[in-house]
Amino acid sequence: MRQTENDCRETPNHPNGISKLSGFSMVELIVVMAIIALLISLAIPAITKARVAARRIQCVNNLRNISFAIMQFEQNNHRFPASGYYFDPLTGPGGSHHSWAVSILPFVDQNNLYDKWDFDKPITDIVNEPLARSYIPVYICPMDLSRSKEKESDQSYAVNGGWGFTIRTGSGVGDCPMNWHGSRLDFNGDGQTCSGDQSLDDLDRKIFKMTGLFFLENWKYGGTERHHSMNSIKDGTSQTFLVTENVRTGYSPGSKTSTFASPDPFLSAFYVGDPCLNGDCSGGNIDYSRCNLGDNQINSGLWGAEGRSPVPNSFHASGVNMAYADGHVSFLSETINGAIYAALASPQGMLLSDTPLAQQIVSGDSF
Figure 1 (tube, rainbow, N blue to C red):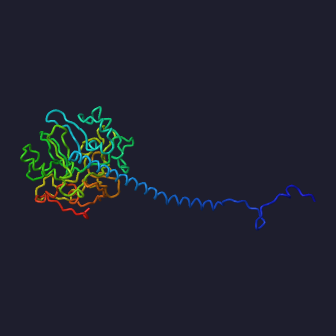
Figure 2 (figure 1 turned 90 degrees about the vertical axis):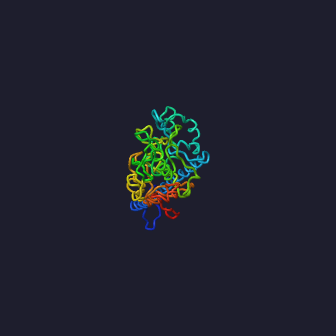
Figure 3 (figure 1 turned 135 degrees about the horizontal axis):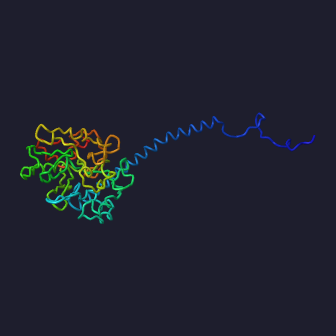
């Protein structure tokens, strides 16, 4: 017989003599896909944790850089900057001038921005307003979920304002200490606050200076000038707050003045709660547990509006990063004891030892 062309074709050898094509079966394909999905599900949390850790490290590095910049300012000027400056003349209109974040611009590699600033004009001036909208990365924590999407004018940090700030009263008395809830502070418990009688008011102001590190000041007009230096920190630089996180500062949609440059006391500084009942610091009215309770507590304003919660707020779980006056940064629990919290805010708490406001002695393992 003649062999045909088809008869000459070779077939692949197989143990059973049966031809079989190579490839994945459906079962094998499903198994491979399941393994890949499992590996991805295991990798995603690890990647997320790595990203969170990187953002947290960046936030801490920002705090360190800001701390070093404040210290360089102090070395050059022999004092810390004001938390914020205002125009407050005895007659005529006043206005916002600038914050500590503007004062330290040369020390965070922003000399060009600082040199353009017109320090004879408020932040709303035609020259300063666009400068105040600048985006400065070191002022923004990458964990700040409220930061500006447009990358302008934002800030995630605030300096230690102690128990409150000063105002000019409706009757015209300037340099009047009050807590951030609006109550005047009668530090010496004599029943007199901001009376206009210097002999009565000066002791309140003297004690007020012992409770915080940064204060509002009157730009060039005088009348309100209060500041500390490294030498005036009597409680120890490693046990005195310098600057912390507050994600409720900085950019706010629709507000031209809610920027890193604003001296607004709700935007530029943070405060511990006032331990004195209704601002009266006489004996029997003082409870230091109030300093970290309710809306005074760390992270209590986390989901509030911008500029409404001048306490430490961060999106780190259970606390905030805090920088101290010696430059070190550590994590501070949101449940810290109120008495310790107030003592760490005060640079001169030891000077209160013979008064009803005597503070707890803080050791390194207390916080």
